Length: 217
Image 1: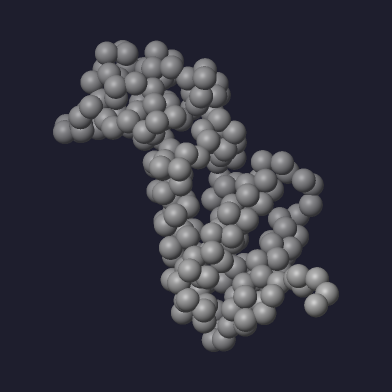
Image 2 (image 1 turned 45 degrees about the horizontal axis):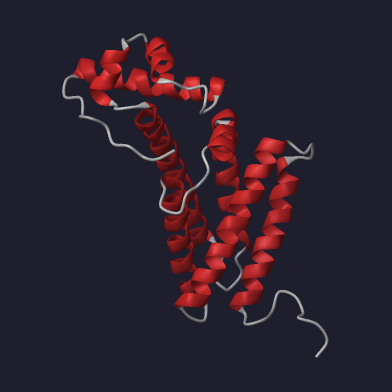
């Protein structure tokens, strides 16, 4: 899916309300029918508007779905960033990262679990492209984590960026997998395991050690 801009912005309250109905309907149709089964005609019907009214504001279905994705990611970014910064701010002084990791994991799982059906469609049917909205979202989280790692003693910007990229992609993949696969064990178990995994990795790197031996010397 390639991002497309709206044709125009609604100016009147009635028009804004119609756009909101269109976006809400697009989300419902996307979840129910998937990307391939979503069309502007189905979105318009679900919103209770004519296709012509939809086209006044959105040139095609990708433009409407881009709005759905943007809103979802904006809300996720705000929630996860706030939880991460709050966890860092309230963590005990020192190099340990477990408290910050745990708080962020809880917020991420809360966010994913709030709309699992939409999450599934996004993950399975809207692949992340290098210049796309999802990649930009991950990149901003990378930057946030990099900044915090530098304040925690990371040995330079490039090592901090590599650590952040590794952690963000690992956490994203595993938390998404837990929500979508429903493996059957309590959420606190996966939070404990992920906290041990990620905090162990970060604490080892920040202390100048290696996570695992490269083999006998």
